[in-house]
Length: 485
Image 1 (cartoon, helix red, strand yellow):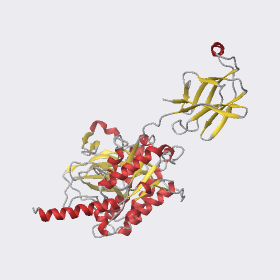
Image 2 (cartoon, one colour):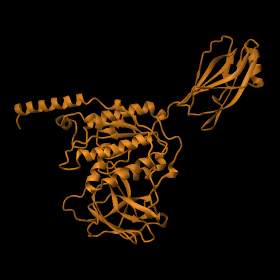
Image 3 (cartoon, helix red, strand yellow):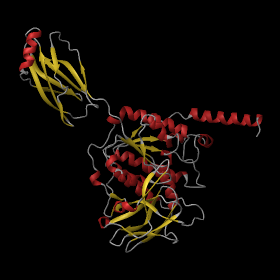
């Protein structure tokens, strides 16, 4: 749907028209055909087209005979010239409108502006529970983008984001923006697995693969208020956050750095505006979501992005057990909807994945469950909780002809399992979503630094939220004295 606005040139003797259709036709996404005529008593020399601050000249030709006859019958007989021109569009018309004019005595008189309404924006959230919290970041953004989707999962690392990125890569390649956050989850996972280096390497890989999509990326860095008594130390959390930041700078992503804004606050004030050590108040996140959505609505089409799709260079793959579709079961709740394969018998990994390394597994079991993942050289027993979960595979498992998944029974886990309840026992069969695999010869590229684009102005002022919480607590204390329970 194009919009054509007729301009008013500073030449009273100038008559002109774009003939219907306006323009005549779209011959491709980056080409446009326009046709029309110009009638004036002045010396018209060239057709002029302006786009993206560039101006191009085109020659005139003879108008259609019926146009000349119609003009003779309706007014002064001035010279009539026509144009039938194919225009190459460097950018879509919703980003950069075209202006069409004529040059008379070295002066350009603009006749028409052709534009296109900004199409509805589509984006996605990748992250953890901060992207799922009710009345939080997601709901704030959905005020402007009702169809905004989240592929987040609570208490999962960047590797889960990578799994979802690859699982939905065809859809994500067409989006207008991606918002991602997982620094708080990554520091927690590094603490639980006792393997900081593995998590840092996976962060690097996640951003490397994300950078291959020609889509603007916004990275949100969440604050951590823990002391190290019940989880990672502030220094460990900062190390992970700085790794996210360095990757955002490396690939030219946009950054909302909440860590820096929260850092000067006292411990008491942080407790007022954080519901726990990893989650700022929902009202604060809702306002951030609104601000971010407003910014994206105005700027997404002009934000920096990779110019060409590079997903052919991806070094990871996912196996979604599509060759077992007839054995899958559906499961859903208010947040998730999945088709799951119960591991009730031995399942062989297809030969097309031979030579790749299995590095993670996504599951959603009904209760605590166990699975055996084995190749000819490696055996891993992994336990899972009953939530939508993603677990790193720590032992190096290279897929070969004998690689299988099988019921774990009551076998004890051979490596660390995430977020299991105390005293857990495997009670149900594992329901698997997919495997994440990495090319065995994959190598991260060398250092570069495109520089990050900071969006700190979108962060709401913290003072009003702190004041409101103090006022509420003071009022509640007074009410408790007046109206004792």
